[in-house]
Length: 416
Length: 199
Image 1 (cartoon, chains in turn purple, blue):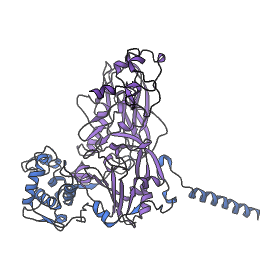
Image 2: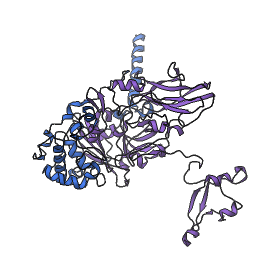
Image 3: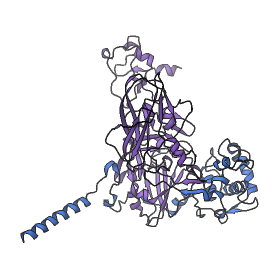
Image 4: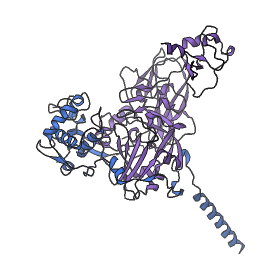
């Protein structure tokens, strides 16, 4: 108790109390405070405290700090379940997902890994089985690339329409990933030309494993240690993850500890009884790596209410097959379609922002977006996907999403 | 004469440009297809892995049985391990849950419903995966805590409960890869063709 009182924050440098400085009122969003024992920290303040400051031009602002903070007025959050947590797509602008809002899918929690003890073992059909420390990996030539990462189980619907973009498809996010190309490491260990598959294994409690065709390793796989300019977040695989551009999330093994080269797939649980989908005719599709083209309107969306007049329809489109070439918008429930403008540069296997200016006349309607990628693939309606897969739902569902706009402006999700 | 000199000159210039562009290691647009072939073949970073270091981590089991340890398991012994360490999450008989059902319910009459359940008898194409997965990831609250003997026994028990082997059949490095899994015939590789078709 006495200890607590002694550590009450004081304003730094002049060591005057908070109360004195603010004339007995409250304080700003963030202040650099100091405890009686001399420890400095940034203290975030509540909204009610903030409201007491009516004119920020009449008091000195916050001095520079060691870490930036999100405004106390902004509270975007992920939506967690027991096994995953979804990105709030409706709260984001542009195409880079802030690292702390990147979606998560774990198979037995997030491990704590000491980077000083981290090692990556590469063995199997190689000339020289080798172990690389984190420092070793950072010495190799590096590469950065902006690309999306999406869970293959990223579609939800609801009959009452009460679903946000986050709930419908919040298991997709985008970052700038930096690391060493796996092809560089393949050459270092001397991968056998007879090797066709490799096992990637995580150092988490699930010791997560997936088999990957060696071809992808030579083409564009990255052994990543950084995300959006800093070390990868623990939830995204700290200190090292595998990144396979355009491929389903779970194969991008996080907390990567081992790669074993082989001449056949290992048929792990995740690639047999887990991440596979029924496609009709009694068949189950396996090794469906690529994420098909997808788009979603993130504004307007549930639970927003819009007003009659000009509305900039906004959203993101992406494809694991390559570049988005077109996004089309319908504001009359799919009768007619018009091209949206794409924000450049449009990148390969990356979230691409689109916009479409619309003057709403106040009549109830549906708005939809659909994208076309460079392979000529057009994002399908839900009923087309169901027809193509023998009526089965499951992984790799990328349907067009409609938003129903009521006469009162209330926006609701609608399945297509 | 002048003409041929010109042509030789032009050819040399062309060759020079070609070689220069081949020589410069470029990072492609958005970082894709960085020409790592232009890099030195080896950088000398990292250290050779010893057989002991590899053995410490290399526990995976392939469909051909490569990776299976010595030993042999029995369904009767697996039943005891299951009751103690698995039944809490997967149900008393492996059907009830609350987590993933492992055993195909014998009471299911609806064939369609049966196909959808991802039990070992219904949906697992390789018996070796049962051993590999239990050993690496189970029990969920104490992953990696089971001995090879316990894993063999559990594998035998779960295969027997699914009617894939007889309760008296031993499960070991020789027998496990030979267990016939009904789901094997259902699995097909990705049939999407990277074009306009919706599949």
